[in-house]
Amino acid sequence: AAQTAQLREECRTFVDKTAEFQKIVSSLIELVDQLAKAAESEKMKAIGARNLLKSITKQREAQEQQLQALIAEKKMQLERYRVEYETLCKIEADQNEFIDQFIFQK
Image: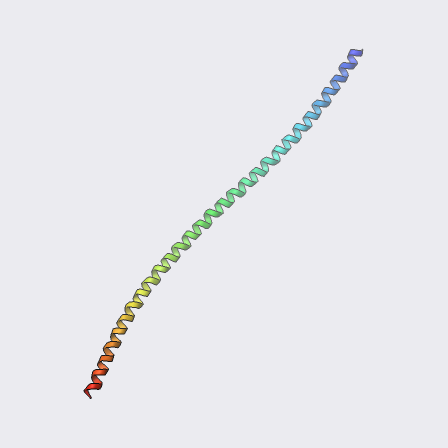
């Protein structure tokens, strides 16, 4: 009877320890699940940030191309204005020469 009582007490202790172990394992599993969810959330944020960065990079490249095209257009316009200016200067010089010759002839 004493051995049975001792065995019963040892069994209760074992069951209590097993229950405590089960609680610890459950809380550990819950913690690991929370960490996995947090890691997945951070992973999604990182993917979103990377995609945003790629999008911004593409936008900047497109903007740079537009600006390069605008610069080329403005350079062509500047060249046209330079040629026109030179032509007008030549015409002005010719007209001044004509005026001078006309004045000297009178």
